[in-house]
Image 1 (cartoon, rainbow, N blue to C red):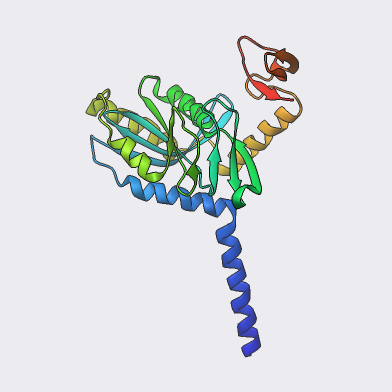
Image 2 (cartoon, one colour):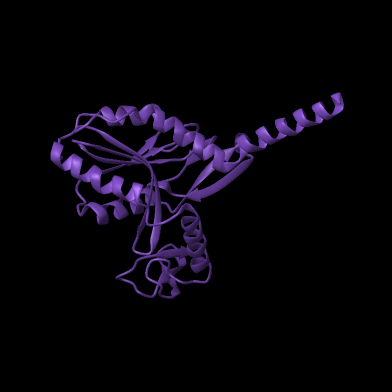
Length: 242
């Protein structure tokens, strides 16, 4: 009997370790930390929407956090990576460095990712002049200076407290919140469909099909070498590295 209890405890211990080490769990923990730091709503002044899933122009967008206040709509993308982060504002991929430089991983530029989220939001609220993008790394060390807002949770809090011109009235705040919360409460897309859309997007790129307009990707020669460019250029400027 004691042996069975020991086995059960060991199995549960291993399960808990694997659970908290999974990327999905780590991401959820990072988003929760940011969510808790944002606080709650203040009617007519501040509204916070977490984990909003949108489907715009045949593409899905999962937005971590949105803050609507008189100084604008703050769109926050959380990346729960550890280690050191290197990149540039317009660079397609950034680098995560672990184990004192012995381990490196590349990931899609979250500034560009959040830019697509803001585009989707602008299609819903029908305005483009009120968005501020913030990228938050709760655990990582940011090793590069960025023109955009990229930093820690404490950096995010500081940026949110900065003096800014008030560009939204109390009525506009209520209207914007109503529009966006309607999409959250009545989703046009499930999480499973969102995952399928991401898979289909990657498949299109691998097959040299533009994920934005559906046209073919062609090899082009540029100032810094060859690359795949959309045949719909200049109307579509999607590119892919060779």
